[in-house]
Length: 240
Image (cartoon, rainbow, N blue to C red):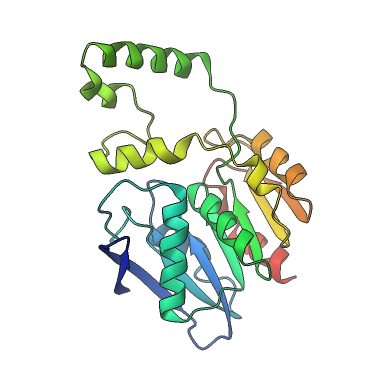
């Protein structure tokens, strides 16, 4: 593991990262999802893609990377771009899971010569259930009476127990609808999805496949973390 400092918008951020197979010429950047860190992605893919240099990164606010103010998705994209520029790293494949997949897609949109691997990524909004809609209504009602501090009792599992900065970051990124952005992706894209995913439903993956014209879609057995048992299959499709 390595730690580097990146100055972004006059603040200094500690970014934790790890490189595997550094002698390989092509680089694969692997980004984790919300609430996770680079260790989870290493667990899945460290033994795969032997012909690539693996770059695992803790996104700001996760793992051993700090966060100083609330971010939006564009801030995550910008700070990663600055990190890559300062380290003089050219990425050949961007891979991301869930929230990390959304960031990977936004990066690939700018670096069109790279490939893109999406794992049950966010950015395509699914209709909220009645239960969630009722919780939102109740919480907004409580805020009128100055009881917004009770948000933890109404937040989703992804938002529970977050500090103030990360909760605001979560609110900034959770309901982004990026269909129009994803439609501009031209790079070769591989989309893998858990059939039983409840966090980002399979229908979102199907929509993404329709939106990204140069894409292949692979529904696989499992939930939101399906890739932990399908990493060899995923690698085979990319390198195959």
